[in-house]
Length: 568
Image 1 (cartoon, one colour):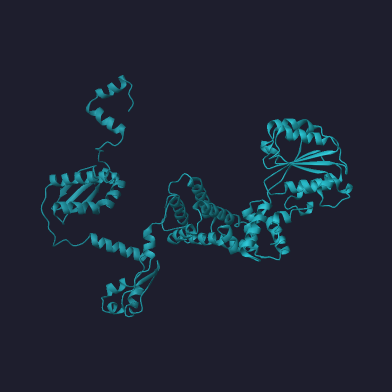
Image 2 (cartoon, one colour):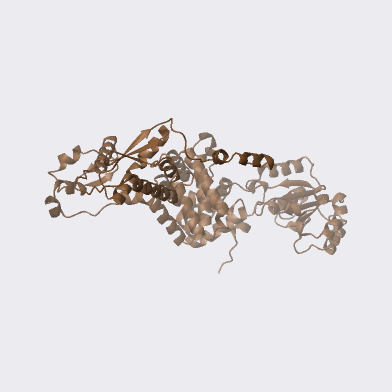
């Protein structure tokens, strides 16, 4: 079997032009060599896999390149010495290094010392290295590389010229992977390379390692499906489909789609984070000025622009807020799946206009979806033999504002078309009239037992107590403001002191009327409301009113309060 060289080693940059995404640093180093303006101590810092060690080796070759006579690949000929501080971090190792520094180079002009992972040196080793780093020999140049600059003591940092390497952009990494795929004769989808670049998170070495792994899985044809399957990531289509369902308020379909995602082995935390990022990208796509912030492929960008037209900015802002809150609460939640499902239901309810006023965490009720579910068709033979009212019930409601009939109901199509929808204003008025007719039903055949005023007032008080117990305190207080009086045979008069109470009492009057009719066994009872704004208030509600009532009965109570300086 032929020896395989991983892409991270095979395509390691050999010149500054090959370094990806660090043009500012490479240009600075090239100009420093050209103008003989290179510092003797340099510190390369930044995330892993962004080219720190590669740039250090290229710089070490460039320094002595004009003096070199041997082959370019023979690093020892250019007086390059590499030290891994992770395994050589003691004081003795640094003392051995300082002893070597004193010896001038045999060939070339400079000796270059590359110390990788310099933050791993011990405190004593740093102190032993300080003097040499501050006043090195004229022929010595030190290049320190680290991923954790904060662990290096300030006295070392102050003696170095610091170069901060940045994370490699997604587009830069994708373009570099595209070049490598062409060299390896691999056909790669643009979206597939983009997913690899995103997964690498700014590290070129990680991107090349992932690229090798996916190529081993899929061969010479690198597709988006193969990449998502091998890397176990959720692709764009998942989030696009979920967002469409959320915008259409389809909560049952949203929950089923989320269950499918979980069944594939993905975590709810990973999904909600990806969904929040998707909403962010949609928000970015809403404005032409921010479209360059979309770090996606050309095909995905078209999809983002298309879906961004459907989603409003308030919807996206609230969705991002709810997704972020779910992300913060996920680890602490004992039922993490329920937390994500609640978040999805709340997001799906943002654009639902079935309620005029709804709280921030409003969720579309289940009855809404039950009303939209299709009903079973009845046999045509049974339909034709039914009266007109039952035939109307068999008509299918395909939309809230449209009523259509089944084909067997041909004789009744004209009648159905004339009937307004119950969701229209005319239909609503007709339903109100039907309700009034039910309330005003003729009770001529029902019993009408006689009753006295004392029995009526006792039941009246018990009804007020029942209202208070059930939490209907407003209606209970109105009923308790006065006692009813019998006027005529079965007419009850009830007096209220203001218009507001009159309106509220009329709304609750039907329930009260049914209660009294049932308890008194008299279905001829009627209640008349009398508005008398001059009626003196008989009941105290606030602490101040209660105190005034008690003070009227006992004037010494006020003297007691003043003597002991009591508050109300």
